[in-house]
Image (tube, rainbow over all chains, first blue to last red; front, side, top):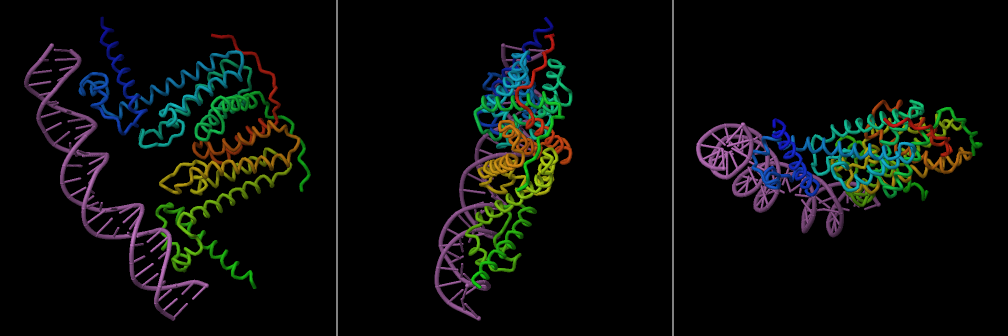
Length: 205
Length: 205
DNA sequence: TATTGACACAACTTCTCATAGTGTCCAATT
DNA sequence: AATTGGACACTATGAGAAGTTGTGTCAATA
C-alpha cells in the first residue's frame, strides 16, 4: 500500500495542472491566481503549495507537460506511417500546426514571444524545446529509415522543424496544406544526394 | 532649374532618414522625438513636418528605405554568382543574416515582433515584406535558372526565405555557416524531382 | 518660403494610495 | 500524518490625480 499515497499525489498533480491549463489558456499565466487554482480542484491553498512550491513551479510543470504531450503527438503522427516518410512527416507536422492553432502554450513555445507575460522564463526554454523536438525527430527518423543519408537526414529534420515553426508564425495556407508542403520539402531534402547536377544558367540580360 | 528644388527636397529627406535611422537603431522608434530629429539635421521642426506629415510617416519611409536596401543587397548577392545557384543563395542569405545581426530594423521586419514598440504597424508590414522578398527572389531565380522545375523552384525559394527568417530568430551557428546550410537545403529542394524513390523502412521494433 | 514662437490637445511619467496576491507559519481539525 | 483555515509580512498590481513632455497646427516674422 506504499504506492497509494504516491498515486493520489500524482493524481492531484494532474488535476491541478488541468485546472491551471484551463485558466492559463483562457486568461494567461499572469492572471492565474493560486487561490483560484486551489479552489478549482477543491483543495486548500496550502495543499497546492505542498505540491508546487511556487507559482513559477506550476508554470514550469505546465510547460513541461504540454511539451511532452506535443512530442507524443508528433511521435504518434510519425508512427502512423512507418512505411511512408512523406505521410509520416505530413501527419506529424499537421498535428503540430493544428495544435499550435488552438493551444496558446504550444504557440508560445514555438514563437518564443512572451505574449502578454504568459511565461517570463519561456524565451530561454523555447530554444531547449526546439532542440528537443529536433533531436527526437532526428533519432526517430534515423531508426526508422536508416537507409537515408545521415547528412541529408539531419538537414531534412532541421528543415522540417524550422519550417513548421515558421508556418506557425506566418501561415500562408491551412494547416493541412502547409503540412503537405513541408512534408514535400523535407522528403526532397532527405532523398537528395547533395551532388545533383546544376542546370546551366540563363544568359545574362 | 525646375529640378533644383526637387533635388534639395530629396536630399533633405535622405538626411532626415539617416538621422532617424541612427536614433531608432540606438534607442528605438518610441524614443524618437521629432524635435531632436529636426535638430540633428539643423532644420526647424516645421520643415520636418512639411517633409513628413507625421512621425508615423517617418517610420513608414524609414521602413521602406531599409527594405529596399535589403532587397538590393540580396539582389547583388544573387548577381555575384550567375553561374552557381548554391553560391548565389549562400551569398544572398549570408548577406541577410549578417545584416539582421546588426540592423534592428531588418531584424524587426523578419521577426515581426513589436520589440519595444519599435514600429507599431510593423506586424502587418512584415508579412508584406516577407511576400515581397519571396516574390523577388522567385522571379530572379526563374529568369536566371529557367531549367529548374517550377514546382521545385517555388518550394525552394519559399524554403530559403523561411529558413533565413528562422535563423534570424533562432541561430544555431554563425551567419556564414547558417547560410551554407540554407543554401545546401535550397539547392537540394530546387534540384529534386519530387519523385525520388523512398528507401525501405526499417522493421518495427 | 523657411523659421520662430505660441497653442490645444494627447500621451507618457510619477506619485500616491488602496487593494489583492504570494509565500510562510501555526493551531485546529479529520 | 495530512489537510485545513486563519493570520501574517511583504510585494505586486491597478486606479487615479498631477505634472511633464511631445505631437501636430497656426499665425506672425524675417
